Image 1 (tube, rainbow over the protein chains, first blue to last red):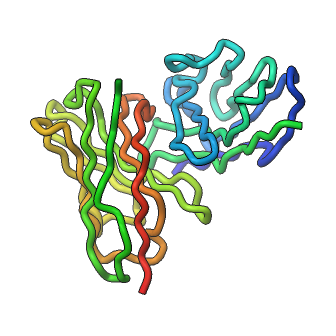
Image 2 (cartoon, rainbow over the protein chains, first blue to last red):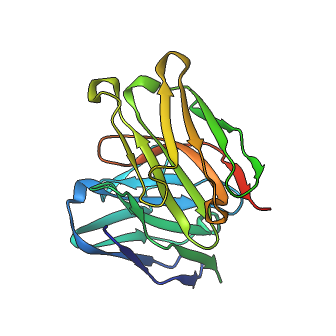
Length: 108
Length: 120
């Protein structure tokens, strides 16, 4: 089983601030199989970025993703109030599909 | 508009059974791998089961924790996916989401979720 470890677990950012969330995999994953989700309080998760760096439909351009092998990251170029959510990475490379533990992002 | 609507959740006693249903609309259901993903405060997001396409002979895969107890199935004519859950345990408690995914294992579409509570 591929274990995904996210860092940090929680963070707070000021409006306009750049934030980066990292996702470390216990074994190497092809970048085609690493995805990110955003879950706002009271809602279902929503696909944010697929295949490491591709924005899902309707996702603002301030979001970006990068990485390879065992190290991946999600970046928000300029934090906005509507970005308050929990973010999860997920691998689709092997069974079982696994998720990171989540990063809760709050606003200062 | 894409929509996934789950039903069938509720309260069940340990050892009991429950069947979840999910009906999809707004996308070509038969072209999507369908999954069930659950969420609980204790375990976070946890993938449960996957069913692939007719061209894949409807191959299924399960998390170890549910293998032998849960069965995923689909009916492309009804744009529906199901999860039969038997011998339920307290640790199966959570919100169960129906998701539509691709061959790269991304869950593009999510339902609103249905709450399953296993308790005496």
